[in-house]
Amino acid sequence: MSADVTPKKPSAWHPETLAVHAAVAPSQYGENSEALYLTSGYEQPSAEIAAARFAGEEAGYTYARLGNPTVTSFEQRLAAMEGAEASIATSSGMSAILLLCMSLLRSGDHVICSHSMFGSTIKLIGSEFAKFGVNIRDRVVVKLRPVMPQNFLIDPVATSVEDALGVA
Image (cartoon, rainbow, N blue to C red; front, side):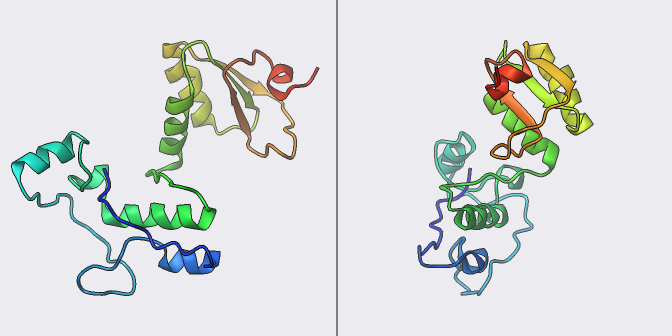
C-alpha cells in the first residue's frame, strides 16, 4: 500500500510539466526531483501501525515489492499526464496482462483473440485461465474498427467475433 502522498497536479500545467513536476512532494531535503528509493524495507513507528500497514488497513510503505516512493511517483506522474485519477505500474508487460485478465475474466467468459496476439498471452489465457473456466478462441483473423485499436478483445458474453464486434 502506498504512503499517503498528495501529488502536485495544477490543472493549468501542460503534459511536459506534469511529466517533471507531478508526483510526491519533496523530502525534508527539498530536492527538485525525487530520489530513487532502493531500500526493501521501511521502519515502522510501532508494532501496531506495522500490523495495520501489513494488513492493508493503514497507508504506509512496508516492503518494496508491495510499493515504494519511486513507483508511487511514477504512477502519479503517469496518471497526471493521462488525466486519470490513478494508475498502476507493473514490472512487465505480461504482469500487466495478467492483472487485466484477473480483474476482468470470470468462469464462463469467452476471449476472442486476433491472430497477431503475443503468443505468451494466448498461452496464459488458453492454458492457465482455461483451468478456471475461461474459453479462448485464438488465431481468429479480426480486423478491429479504428475506435478499438487493441489487438485483443475481452467480452464476457461474446461467443463469436461477429458477436463481440457487434457485426451481424
